[in-house]
Image (cartoon, rainbow over all chains, first blue to last red; front, side, top):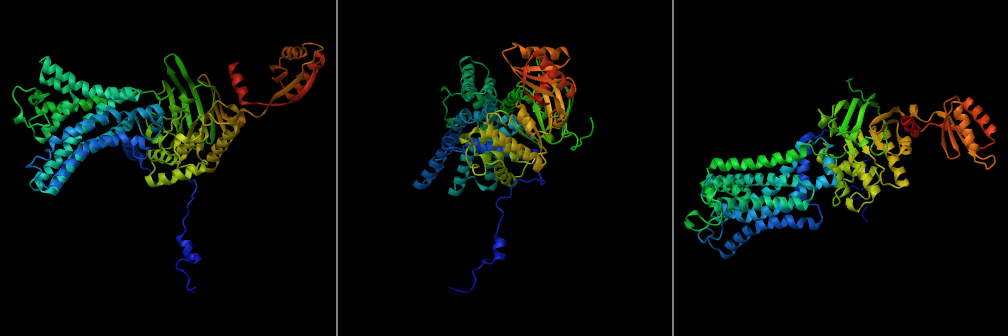
Length: 321
Length: 314
């Protein structure tokens, strides 16, 4: 054996390396984060909750299924183009940015109907709402936190896949020409994703605020999304009412705003306007007659209406007797 | 309203009234709560939870004024609540969440920075005896453990005041005793003021420094518990209900009442008040002798919280 002591074997060295593990409960005089910290924490927790992070495996299935629905087509398109070594644009392997929203809308509807209601309903059912409101959070800041969380989760769906396409095209060499064009597309992706997320967030939260049962909230979201679409379509196409009735079609009017942001005239995300036949039935085709100002106002109205319903419901909500 | 002095007053109300339609949940309460552990006692429906909710700013009182730690809960609720921990009566624990994550999350919401919230969540769970259980999900915990988790989340952010709504609800006697010890320790060792809502009078007597007693929304008593209960208050006279002469206990009761003594009878035991100790003893002796009854027990009586409520009911 060597006589040389091993490094850090002296009591002094051991003392320097030692840490107090059990500090025990003690008073706290340090800084506090205040209301912004409270909101950040609820947003972070709620995003994790809706995505099933930190929860049992069964809670992860549905949210990640929605992500898969939104993202996998983009991955497949890019993968095919790379593996087969073909020109994405020339061979029309990849849909254009605005054309990809068909996949996103499916995932969005699914997410809003199945996942989003839980974010409000669970807090009311298990009493967490009362606990939250016994902290610096107020009703408005609690609701704002929840809305931010839902919007952030929906933004993953509305922006993530299209941003992936943008990056893939850029790497592949078929992306926008020059930095300015690239930034334009990037801003459009963010703006369109943000607008769609905002409208869907407030509409689905409004439905969730009206009931303490998840199933009823899901039915409410389904009626709101699909019902409004079918009803307005019937009113315009069959009853020959004004195209402005499409303002009541949440999915359609949000999609139309997306088209306006991308500067696309047509409404069918999978068909170019010039490809349409004059006599062919085009669901929602009348929306293109609406002015951009009207489309923007209609989307704002959906956000405002959803916010008003949620606030009306929570303003006087009795927490306990 | 007087300036807040934490050495004197934690909570102060003036004519605080809360109505729900035709029901009066709080009826013109005028009270002050001093530092330490305050027991908020009363039967179910007495208005305890309503008062706690008003103290948190979760309810707008119909009329009157209320200050907690010097704040008006309606005007400065968010600033007040940053200094107050709350453990509600309801089962509010999300089943799939781990205890340490739950406490950490609510500490962050209460205003602690993330790192500090993480450390204090563990420290607090160790304090309440759940150190080894902190990584378990809440849904797998017993009622007693879940009550401790609720207590932990209420104190983790080191508040100035903790409101505990029926913290011993659903606990067995051993767990209840441990919980009360813990509550006393929190106030004594960490200088956290506690308002403990309970309908169990004996547990309030055991752990509280002050009491606020409510009955159907009205204030029955308010002040240091040592001033309100515990002092000698008459005598307890337990008789043997002999067969001959029959009705001897009834005769003793009647004789004492006729002499102006306040008599409360439970079977053969009489609680006597309304005169000096010596006089009560003398009159009892005379009444027992006249009725031919026999005494099993005679002792000084200690005033209890029950007496407060019985006096209020009269």
